[in-house]
Amino acid sequence: MPDLETTVNRHVTRLAAEIGARPSGSPANHAAAEYVADVFAAAGLSVERQEYACPQWEDLGTRLDLDGAGLPAAANAFSPECDVTALAVAACTVAELEAAGLTGRIGILYGDLTREPLSCKSWFLKSERDDHVIRLLEEKQPAALITVQAAGELNRLIEDWELAIPSASVPARAGLALLQNPGRPVHLQIRSRTAPGHAANIVARRAGTGPARVVLCAHYDTKIDTPGACDNGAGVAVLLALAGELAGRPLTHALEFVAFDSEEYLPIGDDEYVRRGGETFGHIVACVNFDGIGLRLGASSIMIAAHSDPFQAGVAELARRYPGVTWVDPWPQSNHSTFTWRGVPAIAFSSSGGNPAAHLRTDTVEWLSAEKMAEVARLAADIVEYLQDKTPEWTRAA
Image (cartoon, rainbow, N blue to C red; front, side):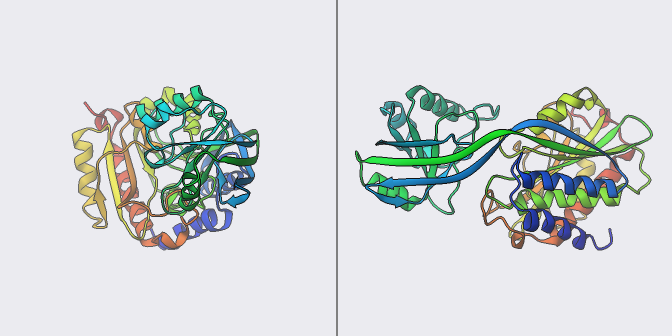
């Protein structure tokens, strides 16, 4: 692939630096969809837009006051509006939450309860703990919630359009001020707007000699605040580069390039893809997913799931040619799970070592390595070539 580094860098710059944060349903999300569709079309592929309904939420400002002094706060994603003054009740653990009298109060959640964002109500991968926390919050009917970020950049710790409790997140210093003044009234005002919206998967196809196809995918949406360079502008950049490279090769199997939307909150983009084509999953030889690749401070990683032993052995042999890529255990948190849970073998590329800017405003292109992105693209292209004489039966787990 000549000058692949330049190609992937151009695509990720367009998505993450120029378009920026692109949560589902937003104008920036629609701009990213148009860009992806245009690149696919320029590669000579047939392009389908799989549109579906989703909420469009806008943060119009948050005000938090304690004894008349303002504290920094940000409305949690999809929070309803509120303007409430009430006594605050704090809880650090699930046991404390179980015992807390929250009805009509402002609940302050911190410590163990906010070590990571709360799962969405409808997310089928949510833990029993999160499911229990959600039920407690809905049963206790607080007037509002404040979630305390323990450290680092402020992150919105609740992100669920089905949870109808107004809520905001605060940095650690503001949380400390609230906890040092127990029993005092707190004023929280959240201004937000929620309206019906739409989003779309962008699916591009090249026909093969039969029904068998190889699927390559990446999600192009982001969390509300982040420009999403590593997560997942880099993955989309590789997907677009491969569309241009592979579209002209003499391949036997059909190719399907899927730019998924709505991966970051609830995978309703995946649901729409399955609704439209789930009956054809038996023809998929394998799926290759790109999510979180190209991190300059990490190694490129590869995993495989729902696979036959010969398929894994063949991919491992190819991967040995790329010393910058390391194997990791299977992980479910991305679009490839839509395939593996239905018995379709999948390979997922990411970065090992963790992304220090994941889901934050600091997930910018400076964290990326064009060389690492290009290495993943070259290995993925080798895998696609390798699969051309393979059948769905051969790749699947026994």
